[in-house]
Image (cartoon, rainbow, N blue to C red):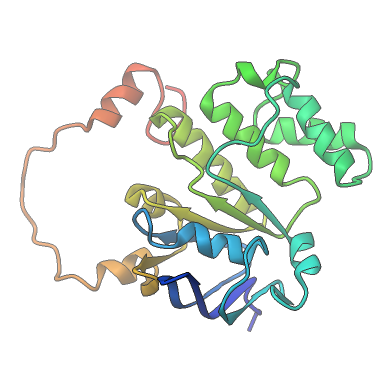
Length: 256
């Protein structure tokens, strides 16, 4: 069997008297999208901070591509990329300059070629010469994700990547995340949006009060509830469907 790209066992973390994580366990298979679903304050960002070596756990173990998070943090940092809740782009620089800067900081060969390749991959070539401060929310987030891929990390952490985005921009980011997994990248996605996990994830874990209370595929989680009753009702379009139709895109982000 293939070793998990992320293996978490018994992680605990407290801040003073506040217990945030109370024994978290899960594995993530390589090249899949794993959604960590939970409400505000459930501990999602704390867990991501631990896995990305920004915060030390109180107990438990975690391995990223077989590197121990506590014992070998340098190897873990080489294997991961982290995109936080807000796009970390330099708004004064152009999109291309942002990418070239990060490529140089990471000592990647041919920074200009890497920047051009990522601009094309995220449909930002035409906007590459514009200042990032002029980008829409979705374009800025796509640029942020593109920057995080410089150096080809096998594991990417996305901490609530669509927070504050409009429906059209959110669909753009969803497409970018799907492309990551299709290219073999392992994605750990935290979100509080149920539809986001439903649309993207191969597996979904529900984090509640510091513990994983369920972990499975969407079908496995649905099977926990009684079978659906067949009823014939008139289905009205959602407001999101109305909005996307009026602006000329489908719910999948495709132009009509």
